[in-house]
Amino acid sequence: MKRLSVGLCAALFLLGCTEPTPQAKVEENARAEISKRLQKPLEVTYGKVLKEDETEAMNKCLSADLVSKLTTEEKLFLGGNTAEKTKVAKEADNVASKLLFTSNEFKGSLKTCSAVVGVVKAINKVK
Image (cartoon, rainbow, N blue to C red; front, side, top):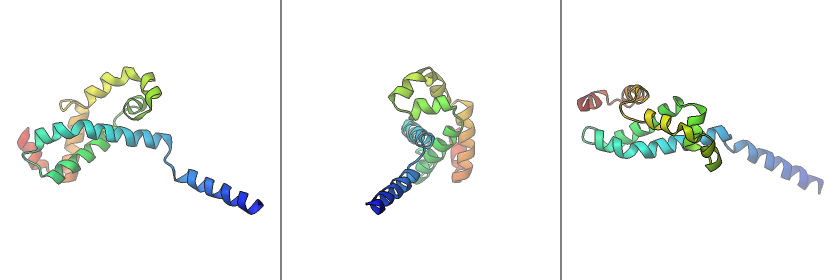
């Protein structure tokens, strides 16, 4: 019985170590939400000059880069649970303004990601 208890404790410990931390989960959810919000505007704006895989790579890169520029409260608004979102609802305007194509945050991310993905010339054709 003692072996079973020790084995069960070890399994639970290892299982707990493989789960992402709440902060990592919030950032993952925030990236997914930003990606979802940017998908259609990216396709409409850059779809004629980028291939589909380039558009997807840009979306993924932009989402990750924009999440890194958000405050903890803004990340919670995008990726937290309902209770957390309610507590930081005042961040909605800040998040919306940072995700606009005309915001400084988006322009910086676009410049970085177009270089990373290798589509600087194509992106500049749209400007």
